[in-house]
Image (tube, rainbow, N blue to C red; front, side, top):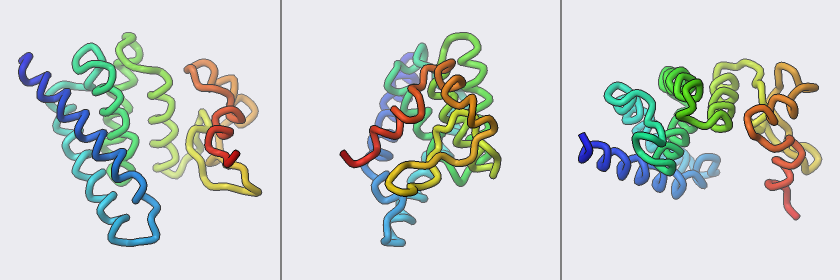
Length: 168
């Protein structure tokens, strides 16, 4: 089992590295680059599904902090695999309830899944686009409570969050 976990940790880290390297192509003008990104995230989503079959949610306790974050990133980017995202969300929610996963990361995955389902998000973590130079979130269920809800899970206020993406 220990060898399997070490191999799993290394695999998750390698998948996250490939994701980071390829993410620049997600919104490329080149259809071939976009397709390569979609294929990579689909492969990773399929593999995460297999990992969840075998291990449940890969928690930091099981695979270490970085590999657990890698699993979350893979789930985040499984945008065309709603079944995988929903399952990751469910398993991650259980892990958060027992203190074994990050409420902040869960909030991002929750919003991402809601947006992918065509629903309003809760925490305002998903950006729809840019208007007058400022990032605009996808619609939120309770926009007036967004910063309060963000604070509950350890996410900075929306204005601070988007300031990091704005050109200086």
